[in-house]
Length: 104
Image 1 (cartoon, one colour):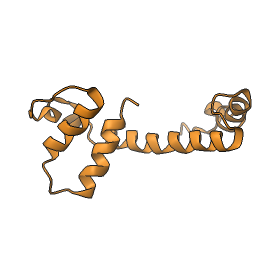
Image 2 (cartoon, helix red, strand yellow):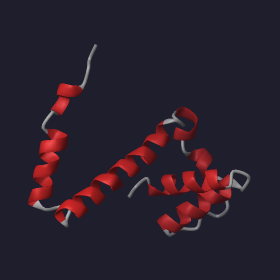
Image 3 (cartoon, helix red, strand yellow):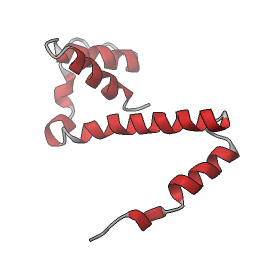
Image 4 (tube, helix red, strand yellow):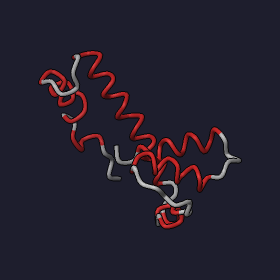
């Protein structure tokens, strides 16, 4: 997943907030990217930390929701990509469309 490094970093940062967070960022991103981060605090280059720091939390919530949906589909249907799973998603997630969104 594209934002999995952000999720891992977030949980590890809260587990030990006194650690070197720049080193944590570099270690996790090195693992996912397979590239040496050269011990440079590259997190400062990501504009989202300054412009939209709360937005990043949405990725963590999204990761949890997606994992729960996939787990449910696999438990109920044995495969998240089966026709039965697709019909379930259509009936329970997509059938309402924008009907539940309040524009007032």
